[in-house]
Image (cartoon, rainbow, N blue to C red; front, side):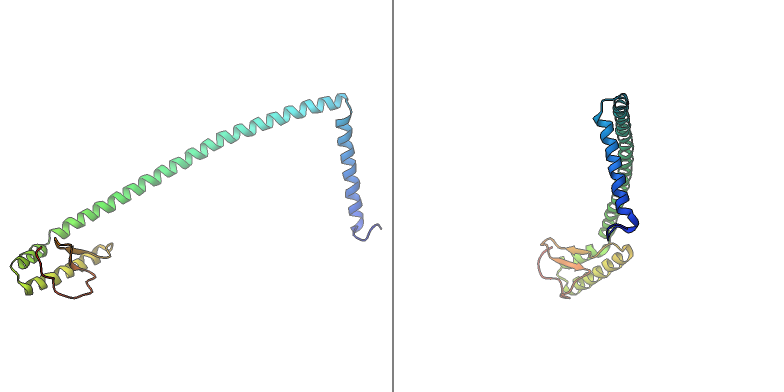
Length: 169
């Protein structure tokens, strides 16, 4: 057979077919014949028609896809907004519930009368109340009560264990 890399004459077959194809293309486009004129006219018409159909299809489909994506985003946005609104509305309700406990008023009264023992027990009771409330709701890392001086009076994470510092509320 032929060369060492020519498997069953495949390489030479491919070369012959390539040359035949190129010769046919050259003969069509080099001669000014009726078949060439008809081919070029029809070819350009077909290419133009297919291109126009492709562009129109792209525009129509892209509009539908973008419209669908916009609807999905609108739905997700609305659902997220409603979920956040509900979450924060519940947190406001929680704040109102915590603020209605009598422990805060009792703590302030005992502080005002300088009753350190009672103030300390109310402080611990508030911390326990906050802990139970946080466990029940399941969304709070810390709940704390701050006096008018900005000092943390009672908290879930009171690591000092000290009594309330002296000073007005």
